Amino acid sequence: MTRLTIFGLDQPVRRLEDTEDPRRVERALSGIGIRYERWAAATALPADASEPLVLDAYRSEVGRLKAECGYRAADVVRLRRGAENAAAARAKFLDEHIHDEDEVRFFVEGRGAFYLRAESGVHRVVCERGDLLGVPAGTRHWFDMGPDPEFTAIRLFTDPAGWVARFTGDPVARQLPEIDG
Image 1 (cartoon, rainbow, N blue to C red):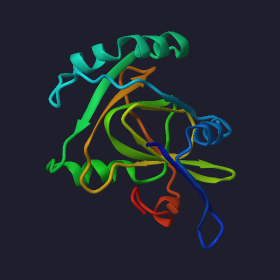
Image 2 (image 1 turned 60 degrees about the vertical axis):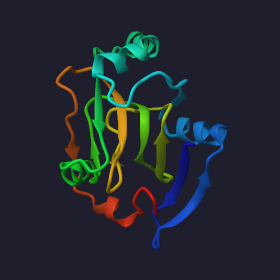
Image 3 (image 1 turned 90 degrees about the vertical axis):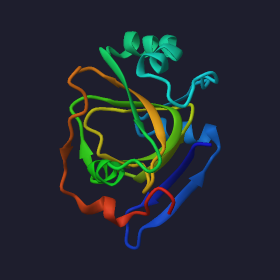
């Protein structure tokens, strides 16, 4: 179940809202310009499904977003429990950053938390299987996949070169609880 927690950034940091109600999640995220959708998760995918198989399972949804938003590329990112590179992969995304294009993720399986900075505070969205999040270009955010990540996600890009971050240098990410806090 998708969980939204909104943190106020006054000191000390405090929780302003904590909900799993899909309507409240969608309303709060749309209020800060974030796209949030729930897609029916494909049930027939094996745990070791190849990238082409994963993309084919969501061909119509991915095609709709490409046509609607101008995305030109899609790929699949996967991390398994116990992966040797998990700590380094996690650390890469834990600092606040922005992108020059939208960051769009659909969770095929597993989970991860997007932290989205807005004037009203920081919105932490713990995404799970079936969740799509679209973070507009220029939105200050970071991502926590947890200390022992397990997820598969489809990523959509305008620039086929893919994920390029510009870090803000702001320490705000260290002031908030991690994914399970």
